[in-house]
Length: 100
Image 1 (cartoon, one colour):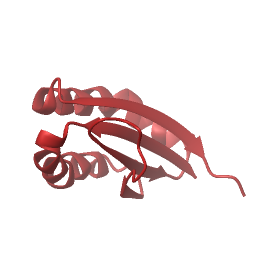
Image 2 (cartoon, one colour):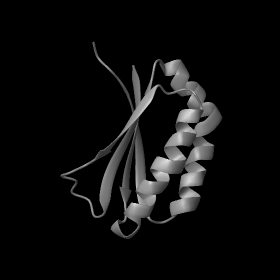
Image 3 (cartoon, one colour):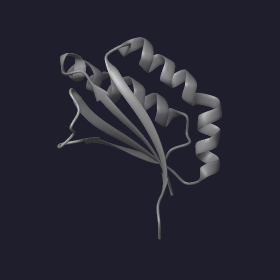
Image 4 (cartoon, rainbow, N blue to C red):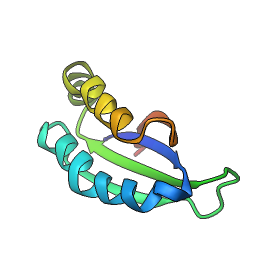
């Protein structure tokens, strides 16, 4: 299984609005692409950063599924996120594979 992880550090002043938007707009758009089987949202409790840190993990069956998502949808979805919350967040992505 492939896990695509978005770690987002969001300013406290907009974090409630951001979380609502992520749940109601962004994640449904990502899942509607059909390349991921499930997702989860995690709040990082002991983050040393200013703001509030979240991880959103999307699970895909294969690296091929992720690559299709990346080439067809990722940049458009990232741009929507940037437009909605420009200058209020820092984001980094990690691609992981489960180990049996």
